[in-house]
Length: 339
Image (tube, rainbow, N blue to C red):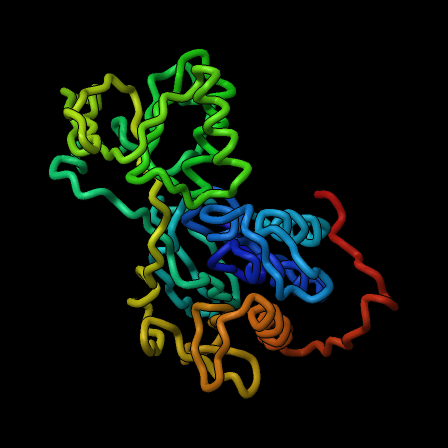
């Protein structure tokens, strides 16, 4: 059992900033996210996309913003359970909550902050009839341990930043060419990444197929071969150990929708007149996952919501204490000592 002061569901920008705000009040946080690294969709989908509406930053790359938020949270030593989805929440007799993940990991805290962005992200899967047969047996939708793919016959599908970034990584670290297919010759990824892909193709490190898509999978116990459909060409079969269809992630409210929370248009209703608490006392929803009159789905607004939610969380955790807010310019940022 992992015990903390605040369980934060969602390790995106709003969840990470919550760690900082809670840390200033000497509250400890543990974050849960289905994505295997912190950052939410900013890390997983568009790490090189510029963001223009963060105060003090005329422009900041999404990945850079996450790096900065991680550094800002670091003094407060947050815990992370990544690559596991929050499945259930149970209220205990003492008023605390136990959140259990898809892998059975349990977390207990007096308060819960749902900062899941647009919900839990699930991979967009290609429509291939026998696809489920090879999931985790050669078909992977995320790269959790890059080293496990090195030296293997690897094929990637997709045209966004995630597909291009991983194709570049593996091509530069592989001793055999990496296959990459995209349905058009217009890539959605960053321009520098696209140029790198073509450069690696010239070096013989990437086998690039445009106007192409995987339409068939074969193998006995594990994936052994993919069938590639190409425009104006015959289908070809390619021997592989792994196929990574990296088509991005689809946001869904997921199991959170079954927790007894008040839902409106696939978002969680909160009280925005005070602290962004849900209809379950002690459970808050902050960031894009919530809804209220006048709601704006901006990272900036999520930061504001997190700041106010933490104030009420402190009162729930320490009902007999009074916290006097001091400006960080006066008190500085005093992190937790090493344990």
